[in-house]
Length: 493
Image (tube, rainbow, N blue to C red):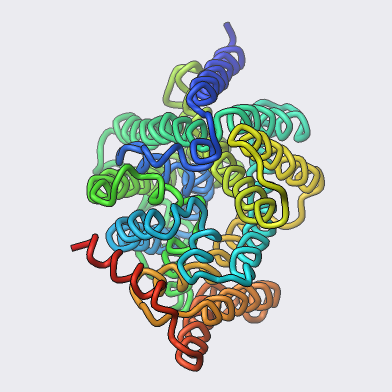
């Protein structure tokens, strides 16, 4: 067999495994609670790996190594911010959110939690949150499909359209039928694959180069030749640039596809084990991605013609260091990162359509009918995202960064205030949500402002300030809201 045939075989095995997991999940799904939240039965390890895999996407295996290869460790401040944000999210948000969503009328989505938490009879909170999710996530899903098309175009010399449709089709199939459980279980397999790939590639390269001493010598030689200092955390970056990069961590508190994993845990006590597993996975995989970039600097300094694009440093090293079949499975890890994120986002979009919009305006239906509507929701969002992916605008990273900021600013402060401040009101939450989304939308589309600060910072601050100010100007929440908050706090003791 040729190297190409081995790699195609590996990808085919990977696709078959994902479809098999989706079929298993399909057999376990009977009602909307199962389809959207796996019946709140996720074990901590499953929730942690699923959250990590659905979060990182192909950025971890291509974008981050490529950025560090080109500019140095100053680019790793994004990772530092993300790890800190993820730890705080697991430590403080996860147990309270799991407890509070169960108390507040068994809320199974972020918008339904907002409505139930504040007993918002106008339904404006739920509808607004659902619309924000649909708008941002449709473009987010589209960016994943674009990444799949680009991956096949660059790795297998196929057409962009074929690669995009193949990745979209496989992901849609196991998500459409398996629902949240299918997306979660495939995330676990994908997270393990990403972990193994990001650990083995740098280790194999270090061994091939003769050890750490030779690696550092080669990096120093490469930096000297290009007048760079890529082993410094601050070289080439201003204070504001470092703050903007680290501010990505703020986004964790408001990402629906991540915090929904907290809501699906078996109990609040599982958050502790989930935190340990999830943060360990993040630290090790991020370290692997950073190390891959650094050893790649030294390796390709001696072989510059073999790396045309810095973002392919991980892929090129895997193809050089391993048998083509193994390299094929490592290529599959990149697909895993892309597909795990897309599947999670499709489920959240589906829940926004069915749980947060259809249930408000539509007729009552049976559990099986709601599951059907959920699958139609997944299909609808995937089709719209696919149409957008046919003619993508902007880079993948730009689309992801904008959506991440939108959710982080619109939802993040409200999640924190909802869980830790009993005086937050429905009017305050609605005003803050709209303010955060609008600030991100405006700031993120003005180059002069984006060049100064990542849009999540002003958006997050604006949402927080407006939500608190409006809540203090209006009457306190009714006694029922206060009683539920007290019940949640008592359960956390």
